Length: 327
Ligand code: TRP
Ligand code: SF4
Image (cartoon, rainbow, N blue to C red; front, side):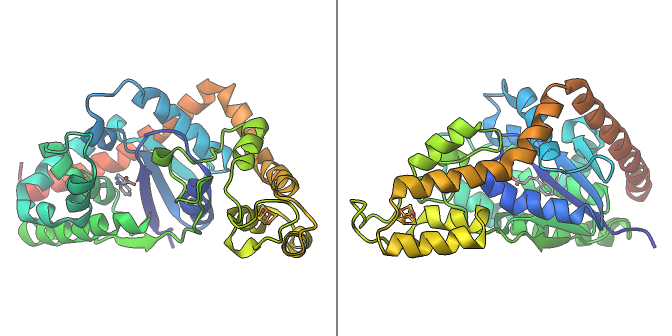
């Protein structure tokens, strides 16, 4: 029996952080062991809101692939490619846009939310409204069964299913309806206790050096009631303690728990221990990054080979599509 196909993508908008590591990337790594995985860099999607500022897209694409490879995503198990390398996505997007009612797009919760919330960008474009149609093309081009995504992307996968039903109804059964596979994300908070996010400037990146990690950890908010070392603290409301639970041994976690409450250990010390364990956790990632960052030709070969493989599938799908649409 052939493996079920999984597809997911990320927009190349900057380096990946611990939130991405424990969310999407951990999930993808697990999936590469059992599924036929297609993971791609959605560079056209990055233009839907940032069309005036495209200067960094090229380097972000490469850095993103290096992030993926350095956490252990494996080109022998997955197909990695860049969306714009497979022009068939644009053709399918165009055909799907012919049959997608505009009200479906205007009702999209992600769209409505972003129109209200994001003020510093021009979102009044056709491309931004059509974002989910391009995403639908990305997904169904490969006849993916499952789409691992965060909760914010579920409406887009739902819309994809609706578009598939409409296409199949009009032109005959060409596509399969994909299912969203919800990525479980442990809540990783940034140094300021808000959700870790690039846009909040509170993230620890996979590429941060040990020194940078230590300095970011030293700035983390702790138990706000604990002003001095002699005040007992409450680890249960401290983000540093949450990080200990992710990166330290059970013994150390128990020790911090005890010694914080009894005021035997100070926050500075507690943070130093945590930072060291976090850096140890990142060590294998640093090592792989070093390899790929100094072998950029290898990275480019991976992306070219992946694009070739993706294009083969896309070409076959588009032949079927053109026959169905009779154009
Ligand atoms: N919209 C997704 C995001 O912002 C990225 C994306 C584009 C995607 N096309 C996709 C994700 C297809 C899954 C499948 O995260
Ligand atoms: Fe948080 Fe550690 Fe300070 Fe306790 S000792 S408040 S767990 S940083």
